[in-house]
Image 1: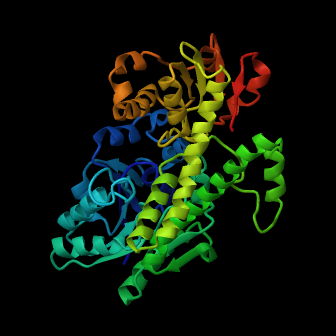
Image 2: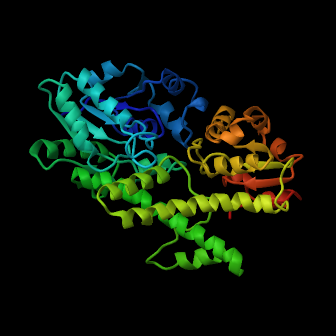
Image 3: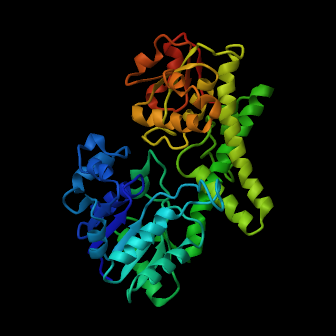
Length: 441
């Protein structure tokens, strides 16, 4: 199949950057990103400094291809119809109700996506899972496509993203690997080759790995689980170091010099955040429970327990420095994104640390160079709404949240400073103030 038009459904952290890189490297292909949210599409078509996703290098990349062969549109039907290849890059949050609530992936957006593809398709398509999905989701997608369409052939591939927010553009240009899972049939092999040929325009062929669909789907969950495990492991040692007088930085360096382990993801933090690690571990644990692998599920859930412990320990360290009472104290939180060089605050440790401090009676002064005020308020409000005790005095609690656009304003007239996200501008903050500064655990 010759691909002249690609449609990506989902204009978020995965869809936007990925399609921009494909458009740059495949100038003969028209790439259109669609989304049901017209405001998001408007932002992608608006000023480069206001793109809905912040990634270093993304604005410059979009400027090169937008309006040439990269387009952003809310015409989902029209772009599905004309595309030969469709990427599904919609959100797959953790289920909030029903079977598997609190652990399993909510596939309602993926299923709606598949129904739209079936509804508006008038010719054969290659459909690609780009979202992080539980193993064997492709089976469900194929069922929907075959059931809802008439005499149209759909080939479903798994092509998970392995992007780290903050370095996504770099990761897309120089990927460790590109994974494509496809069916072993002749049409499946042809579809796999078609997608591989697109990536081979800029990715060395030896880094393009082909597997069966189920291996590809499971690899994404397994990769994130392994990375999260390393973070929780080193964070657990940071607590022991504080009790024994050992130095966690020295410990991390010594461990990382073992070539069997390596230095990556051995840096302590307040805990991991983002849209992937917690969601994917919960999904993995649910999958293990489904297959009666309860001991395996409990092993992975311990990774999340250590992560929650690390965030709680950081909050308690701040509170204990005031003899256990921060009622009426003002605490500055520097950093709200879950990591530097992104505007994504999903599951950020800052949210939970900030909420703990608010609940203990503190006033918060918050500064992050990229996360907008309304997002910060929304993040905290989501926790307030779940807490009946705090919800009853919500107005008073919200009034104790102050958000600033400059670091100088956030760090003036405060009782303590906590650095939660390690943006470069927060480096050496201890040398610039006499106010107590709390860094990572």
